[in-house]
Image 1 (cartoon, one colour):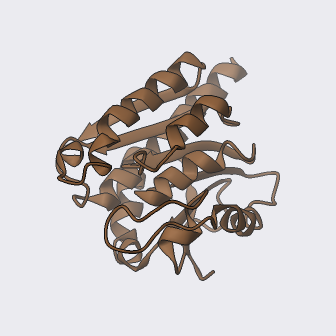
Image 2 (cartoon, helix red, strand yellow; image 1 turned 135 degrees about the vertical axis):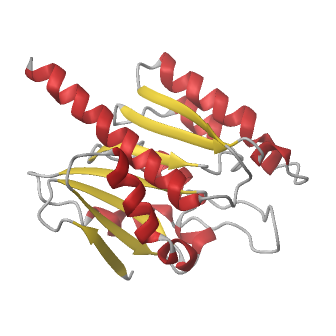
Image 3 (cartoon, helix red, strand yellow; image 1 turned 60 degrees about the vertical axis):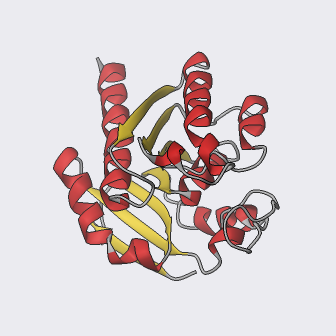
Length: 217
């Protein structure tokens, strides 16, 4: 997978984000959104995935919009991303937008490499994913969830469940003692994905900073 790097190459905080061509066009804006909200130097590695519905899906599922079904390529994608996370002196975070946000949540049930997950407008309508969360522990303790306030108002009956499902996920993570926030943004799913993702990454970085400072005291 092709990758693009932003920020400080020597930073101890490393953000891993699966992206498509649309995301890449907005990366400079996302980087600025993180930097505005976070004073910690960071490096962001954006990894371009070619088949979005396959590479980021944890299991096969029928098409929800259009005609393309979902594959089961998430495990292979995660294996490739973990090759970028081998320096034990650094702290890694996983995040993304839409299906990449769902992938980030799934990824932290599979590995403890990531210190936090930034799930911006994650596709929590994905079939059986809430059942998965109920039966699998997260292996990180910091998660940012966000959603646009118009996203549940879609005509697609499957995708319209996203509002209730993200509330359920938030409640579940809180019950488990995960440091978690659910932020509501204005607009539908296509509004400011760069800003929403940047805000989510900044939130998990800042919460981890607070945790480390507390532990040091």
